[in-house]
Image 1 (cartoon, rainbow, N blue to C red):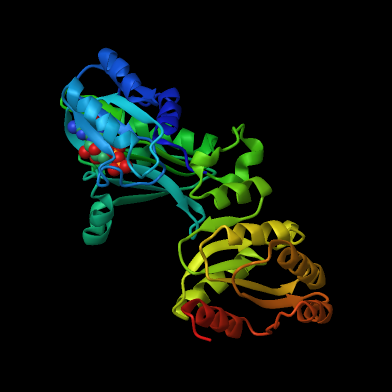
Image 2: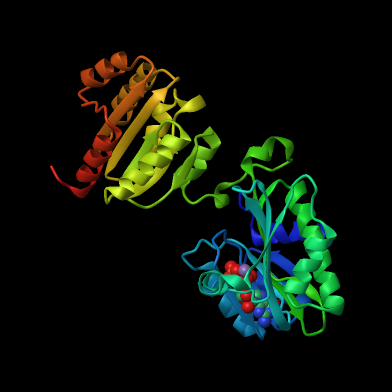
Length: 373
Ligand code: GDP
Ligand code: MN
């Protein structure tokens, strides 16, 4: 689960990291009120979950009230669904540093990423000058070691108070990373201000959903999801990812669904949504198809393979979903697993043409999406 900047910054602040003075607001008149306390210049920061807000014009620096009112109106009416704005005092920046901790799945440890050249161009920097990004693995059992912090501060070319404070930020960030079961904690930029302060200018925090059971987390509302379908799927416990292509995937198993996704791309097709209705969800064909139909897709592609979950139950579910929902687009099925022969009979009886080869099913779906007959 991704958190909004203001949530990440609240957590950072609680961990002892300095953040600029701010207020969270929902209307233009609240912006005015907040600024009467914070003063000018100030920064209006749209609270949306997508990155690159600076480049998308969703971060505005304002020098006076009339500019602030105009900026607030523009942001609240932008097509990016801006419901809240974080109004912040503007920091007089001397340097912008990139600092993050994430998971290195291959090495099975944590990974610190940092650069003296932080800010909105960090992705470009990673491409054009990867040597400017400092990387250090941290053993999860041993935790962050003092020498690693010193290495980082040295690599960033920091001295004196800035070095000391940045080291403290890294320790605090490490604690947040572990305590919150995070997949990513990121501060980009970490400001070194002209008055010598070190402050989190931005905050990104992605929490590992698999650790939800041991974290006291509030239920995520609609604003955390990319679409209504993604939100509903989460409420049902159905793994779902939103894309914007032509083929709705309704497959069993994360590995198989991912493989089918890759095959679709290989065949020149595009994916509308990734939906996994295997495992504990194999009796939820109705809901799964309803979610697929919420997409503007051209075909629904169902693939299961070698499932322990009964294929005949899935086939019955699919047929019942078709009868109930009367889908307005073709359905391609390749249902293989326990009781497959019964599944085939059930699908055929409902007028479907079951396929037995995943790649053939993918090719069929891609051709249908393209409009070939
Ligand atoms: P992102 O583009 O979504 O990562 O949004 P950020 O919060 O990182 O803001 C983008 C950029 O806006 C930063 O890299 C800064 O250059 C600029 N910015 C944000 N806050 C301030 C501020 O207080 N003062 C100044 N001068 N620039 C700021
Ligand atoms: Mn940023």
